[in-house]
Amino acid sequence: MKKIFALILTLAMVLSLAACGGGNSGSGSSGDGGATPPAGGSSDGKTYKVAMICDSSISDGGWGMACYNAMVDAAAKYGWETEVSDSIAQSAYYESIVAFCDLGYDLIYAPGNQYTDAILQAAEEYPDIAFALLNGGADTPAKAANSNVTSLLPDSQQVGWIAGILAGLMTETGKVAFIGGMEIDTTKGKYAGFVESAEYVGQQEGKTVEALDVVYSGDFSASDKGIEFAKAMMDQGADVFFGDASAVDSGARQAIDEANAAAGSVKVYDIAQPGDFLGQNECIIGSQVTDNSGLVGLCMEAVENGTFGGETIFGTMQNGVLSCGKLSDLVPADVQEKYNSYISQVMDGTFMQ
Image (cartoon, rainbow, N blue to C red; front, top):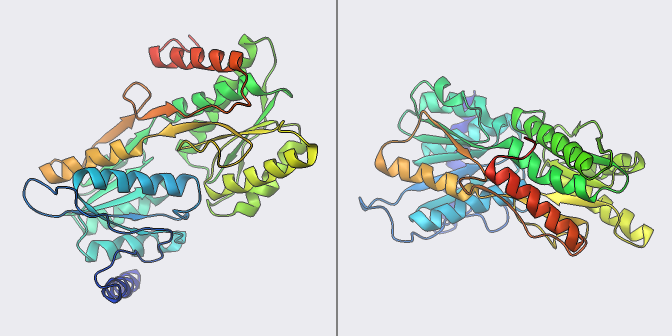
């Protein structure tokens, strides 16, 4: 039944592309999703194609948008064509992947550990297609039957550290909050890093910092849950937020901005990720930035060279995949100096040592 549904979805995609004159909007795609014109192409003259599936929107101002932009940026560099299918339900992961496989895409890019089962199933059935799993488990490539799966794994602890340092410095109430989308290993790793760094920095600065218990929305699209969670956590005294929940984070920021407006000043803050989103909301005081385009680009090189699969590629501050975004003027100059000092410790490996 799943295979039949996938074939129907493939046909729908073909008809959609044909109706656009060979156009570039993926099934379920939104925003400006579509193919990027080749920027030179590969050395063998072939035009390679990459497709992304995503359960959040590529216009969500958060995870979905950042991951989509990573694919587009890498494709522009290597001359690949792109396609995207976003806002898809968990029940449609496999069918959406197979539809792109049947359309002849060379690389399937899935930004999240939640796609693992669907990726492994499709990878077994399509041995000649490459599958890149962002935030995939370190052991996932070894589970692939045909060695055609690669995990792209930003260091979740360092992601949490970058945000937790700023939270520990900026909190006035001594309470910080984290909102998660799904209870997956990478999100749990970010929360753990956030908590330990916020508490450590607070201790170094002579104050006690406590992280509220993490809450999970169960998906990445329910912005209303973000509003609900943020209100409840502000009621508990949280004044600095960090999240790993895409559109849910956007909902939380909406609630924070509204609370600040009602109070007449910005006293509750949010730290964004995985792009530099300073200015998107008044409450955002900084961002943790992940350059996933570099990781996706490495996959494209490997596909072209015939060396793809069977490995996990890690991203850290040390190799330039992770970094800090711009800081808001709401962060005092002396605090910015302290923040940069702590980040330098992360870079040289002495943080919390």
